[in-house]
Length: 276
Image (tube, rainbow, N blue to C red; front, side, top):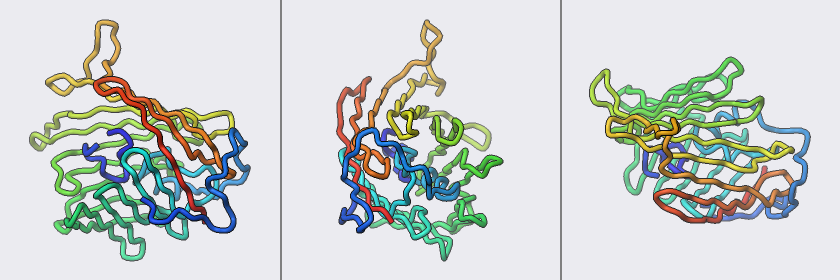
C-alpha cells in the first residue's frame, strides 16, 4: 500500500494541485538544506489528527500551517486545508474526497460514483466515527490520553469487502511508526488477514522528516506472516525514501524512494506547498 493513504486509496488499491503559487509570505520552493526548523509551531493535536486520519504522516507540516500541497512523482495527489488547518479535500488519480465540517459529512467520489457518509466529531473536530445511510459504521478512530489519534479502522468503506486498520505509534512528540493490516471477514467471528505492513519514520537532529522505511510482509496461505529459519519475518517488498531540499519553513520538497523485492524501482517525488 505504498504511498496510498488519502483516506482510502488505501483499501488495497495501492491513504493534484491545479495551481502551485504561494502567498506573499512564503517561498515554498526555496531550498535551504538542513536548516533548523522554526521554534514556534502552529500545529495542534486536532490538526495533526486530521492529517493522520486522511493522509500519510510524511505530509505533516513541520511548523507552519498549509493551505494546499501537491505531491508528484507516483500517485500524484493534491490536498487542500481549511482556515483552521484541517484536511478539507484531496484528489488522488481518479479519487476525490471532501470533508464538510459544517454539515458533518464526508463525500467520497471515484469516477462518477459518489458516496456520502455522516461524521461524528468531538468538540475539536476529531473524527470519532463515520456512518453510511444505513447507520452502519464504516470508519472508527481511537485516541490516547493525550488526545492523539492512535488507531483507525475502516470497515466496508466505499463498498469494499475489506476491513483496514492503521495503528500509530508515537516516540515522544512525533509519529515513530505506523502499522497497517487488512482483513476479509469470513463470518461474524472470523477475519482472514490479507495484508500486513509497517512504516518506520526517522527524523534528523532538527526533528525534520529524514527517512521512511516501509516493509510489506509475506503472508502464508492461512494469512499469517511467514517466519523464516532465522526467526525473522519475511518481507515481500521494502520501500525506503530519503527526504531532502527543506524549504524555509523546514518542510521537505524532494524525496527519492527505492523499492526492492518483487518489483525493484527508483522513484523521485516532488512536493509543492502553499502556506496560509
